[in-house]
Image (cartoon, helix red, strand yellow):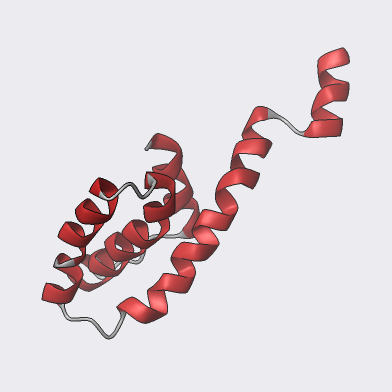
Length: 95
């Protein structure tokens, strides 16, 4: 009963994790517009840029939204399927 009360007040662990990651998905959606004009080579060129940013000390959490947006855009082009937001959330949880 005490645990139920805490879940009502603060949310379950799952609720808190979703709340933490939702802004990341929103940021990934914002990157989508800027990635559409790039050709496939431009998207592929993002990977070494991400690596350099990581080596320069940028946090992985800051790179995730753009990296997931690149992955989503490439999937849309190659497979004809766009990842849903919930799929991005799942990937972020697994990362």
